[in-house]
Amino acid sequence: MSQPPRIVITGLGLTAPNGNSLKEFRANLLAGKARITEIEVRHMGRQPAGVCDFDATKWQKRKEIRNGTRAGSISIYCAREALADAGLDWEKVNKARVGVYLGITEHGNVETENEIFNISQFGNDTKYWTHHHNPRTVANNPAGEVTMNMGITGPHYTIGAACAAGNAGLIQAAQMLQLGEVDLAFAGGISESIHTFGIFAGFKNQGALGSHTDPNQASRPFDKNRNGIVISEGGAIYVLERLDDALARGARIIAEIAGWCINSDATDAVLPNPERQTQCVQMALERAKLRPQDINIVSTHATATAQGDIQECIALRNVFQHCPQTYINNTKSFIGHCMGAAGALELAGNLPSFEDNWVHPTINISELDPECALPGLVVNQPQQVPEVKTILNNSFGMLGINSALIVKKYEVA
Image 1 (spheres, rainbow, N blue to C red):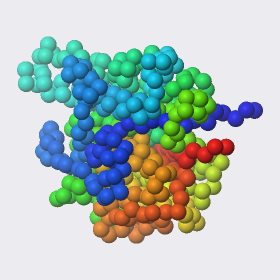
Image 2: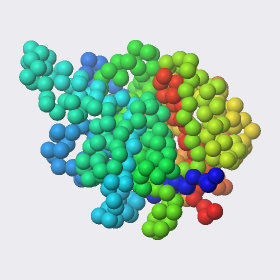
Image 3: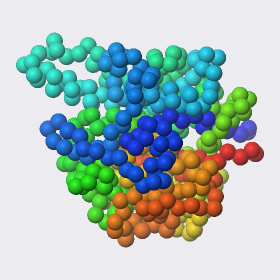
Image 4: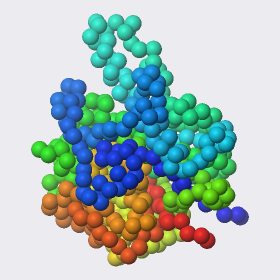
């Protein structure tokens, strides 16, 4: 049986609360700079949140922005930036052989909440309900907006995978490329979550909404005094290709997709299951033909909830307790929880380690929770290491969905 084609990353575009390019994002991660602000949330007042500040008009007309969605604008910005980064001659690309696969946590809440509020100001008369509502709220909207903006006529859809969605988008794209369904893929994850009050209210009523007098310290995974999630928006979209195609056009190869796994806890809607998380990581390692000690960086999912962080740490100890060259970090301490974009953004922030051999830290740890004291955890200051050849990216979500994605530094076989 022939081996499936190798899949590589050749382009990346992102927007995060602390950066609108990989260069800016990475610089802030190494400098320990978070960028969390406070926003006014309907019915709830001021709340810490991660807000992106990108120029949507760079790639969209103002009318397109008005008629579309925030999620669509994030997706278009990231996809267009990824295309530019990949160095593709877009005019010569067969658009029918391009796929768009974007992970999302939820979609449509923002638009529906806004319309309900709007008609409440007019006696709930539905004639004031926008005719743009339906195309704005269908689940495939963010990916569909990308295809319309870029003239892509191949397949597009979103992958609803809770907070594992960013990894799921990349995994779906890799699979479609291996199957020969497409020749080029835009893949990753996006989130517009800060624009819906429902997610804030839901986490608050679960006792899982983060807070602090200094918003930049509100997201503090692994800290003994952590108190919950900081909700953020953002996006990261990658260009994926088969290795042979990338080499044929002389592309710069950022990383190679080495292995992955998605599995389910099947136990609880909210509380993670460390046994299933352990199995997810182990199965990704098996697919990548790697041992735990071969992993140089583990990018954790940890959201700064009391039990969620502990459960993931149990899983990580199960796999990496005897791996002195494995370093562990977390990106949500800088940008909050970008939901559907989280996994894709967190991977992006670690990719430059292949070139500079620095591991960015987890910040906002004043007192490390003893139950989260992992060997190799990089705390508050970046750490230079001898070599980075592999990264494991963990992303987990509600309803017990787990994802583990392994990327490696490209090396000629």
